[in-house]
Length: 88
Image 1 (cartoon, rainbow, N blue to C red):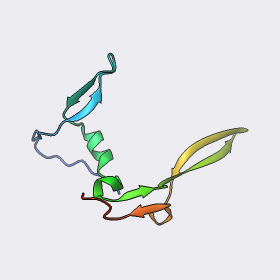
Image 2: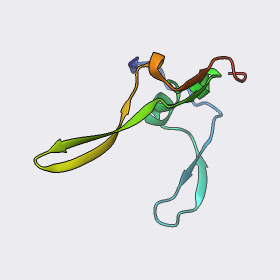
Image 3: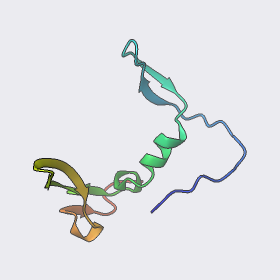
């Protein structure tokens, strides 16, 4: 599911999220950026579900070298998916 950014008027929300200052590594609270919110919304945890095994490790041989990475599984192939696990 892809999120589409719609042109809506800017309305500041009283929502603050923790971030780290790159120079001092101190935690500070600030308004979330669009990219943060758009990455949180598709997460099963946000919808009240517990999910495990959404990605699987794979190794691919490219030009004689092994490339390792995580690949998404289809939702019906997740190892665990408990819907309505907690309030959303």
